[in-house]
Image (cartoon, rainbow, N blue to C red):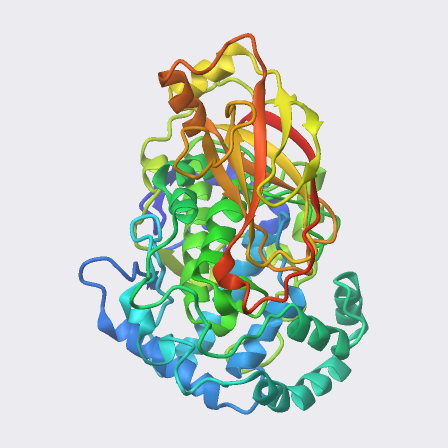
Length: 524
């Protein structure tokens, strides 16, 4: 006897029981396991797919309009909902996928209720297939420059100040503890961050990308390319996929490929509100994160097909599942009873599935490999540490010839690059190159040595060094084809910081200071 999941992946009852036993801490939650459940009630559709129903965006716009009109004392108010992200969202750690699943799930239910569309499901933006802002998102309230939105910081503060102070006074001791771990000891701390970062920006720069110029820049196109997505889906364990382990979810530790590449780069390329923790003010946020959640679902189904774990293993599972998520509310504005990460490990009672999109082929082509080579890691040393704008720092890593050959054949090879964040991360990026000529200048993303661009997302998570996992397989393959790899010489990983001049008028630029903290090379 077989069960059919909404994704179309079949699983035997024996395998279902085995997987359930492996994730017993999660299966105890009220959210159903993705395995063995009936076909999903709601379908999250690709906004750019042929035949995309116009009703989806009409209902989404109706829900946004309703939320904008709700008083700021209502938790479902559009700006109040964005503050949940500001107060509690994790980035740069292994709770990144699961927190955002919960955040989107409850938001979707509120949209369904307030739009009076009982079939509404959030659309997703497949930026791999469409590396530009969809044209529909420049129309009406789907564009945060619309007159329905608050048009100045002073008006924003005037509307939200008293309701947010009242909310702060209502927080429980457990909520206040979580906020203190984030560095928020009062509501004034939050407002200082919002104003000085700055998180809120009024029109016109609510987005850097415009209807006249909606396309991604070259580094972001690389970050969302199918090759990068396939490398993001390659890890065989949850931590390598979902970003680094951390002691609590407001602590940034390190970025996996999915978070550090498409997630961060798309946020910053869209620009404006999307660059920081009030990014949910822009309706595009939810379509961006629906695609991130879709790719987590793709990775999960790939793992199931390969008989590999879908969640953290061993004792780590309890630490991960028990992390408190205390700020979500339901479609009526009431606090929810699902208050831990484990409650959102599966799609469960949100009851949605996804239309097929980019990256799905990793599921269809997945074949169990009992004798697959184990993951490898090769630590490097630094030959220069100080990072200055336009001036590189670098490390060297000795890598076996077999790894270079595997990269030339398409295997996932990555570099781990640790960077001390600069005082202001807005408008700053770090280009990563492999084996450029000594003393080379003018290196660009069009260079054959180029691997990826590292960007931070949001400032107040990054007071300490963060480690980014970046794919370097493409660069190694290109260099091998040009006979520019020497088997007995270490790889040189070169990092060059640069700024985006167009962002300077909006962002108060602190003096740049950063350093390279370490490099390594590995395989999944």
